[in-house]
Image 1 (cartoon, rainbow, N blue to C red):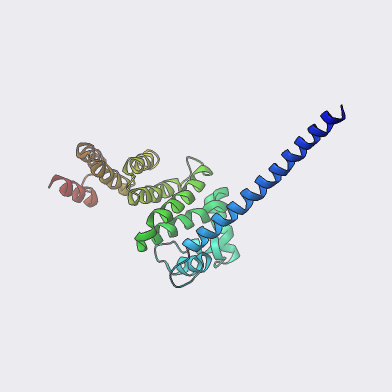
Image 2: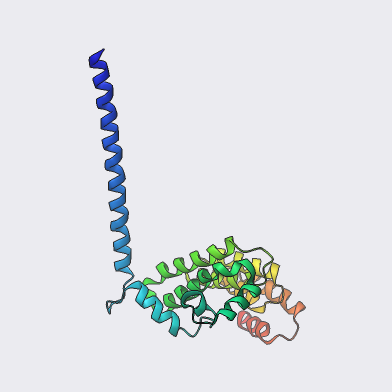
Length: 219
């Protein structure tokens, strides 16, 4: 009876030891991975990711002025109230959209690490889309920049889905038709590319962008 009790407690103590060991192992493994990632995304001049991000974000002309408020509080408090009124509850998530824009822009400038930054950018766009109402006035814009990042990743099929989603919610957004036609061409489906342009041309006759794209594909 005493032997059985001792064996049971020994097994229990062993289980507790192993559980504690694996918890500590996983913690230090995660920490090591995080340090490796931080090291990888530091640029050659020795700048940390946060330093590079802060400087580059402020200087990038492709990022809307209001994005600076979401990250650095550059705008006045009354502007904050204005944007909350304009975007609604979704405003509190818009810094992820701004981050997505910057990561995409940085990927274009640094093709050697483009895939990493593009996926980070897409993650930011997805974060906003998951928390944004489907009828939100700004949704098409987030979808469009996600589609552009997917095009740069050469994921043309997924990009096409995003462009089609834009056309559903904002039928007058010409860049979505152009983007969708380009995606079809890169997939290898020129017939669908021309069909989407013909459809757009019927709705928006004499649109220069659509006409130019038609000429480009018919060569």
